[in-house]
Length: 142
Image (cartoon, rainbow, N blue to C red; front, side):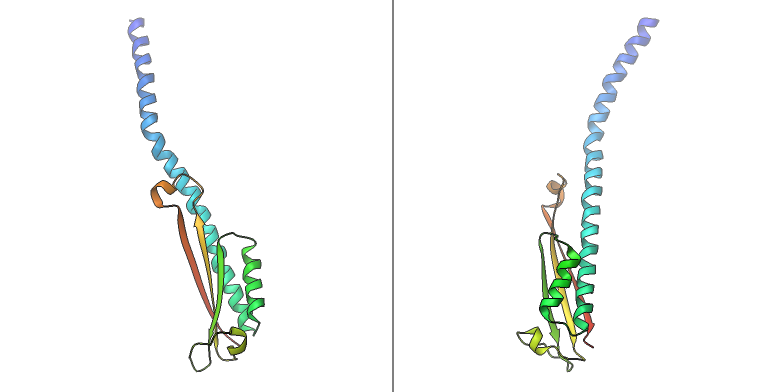
């Protein structure tokens, strides 16, 4: 009887190893997904805040260089970002080539911040290597 119990316990160990081998890839994908998408949500929030802060600076009639500096400060060295500053005139028409020359009180400053999020875990095999995040903020120039 004891020999029968020992043999059953030994057989169960092999079954547990097989079950673990089947569940492990799903568990790892879940953990890697949480890490990567959490990081993506964090960076997306940073991009949103940078666009809003830069647009607020532009609404106070700042130069395009000052607006870009605010966006860069808000992103604090996040690689893969770019910022574009445009505007509309008070009559609703688009500004010309230069924001600094065409921005006028009553118009709208438009700041677009774009970020390319590179996946940091092997989950990229399933969802692709990168995700583009773009946020646009508009505020009236005072």
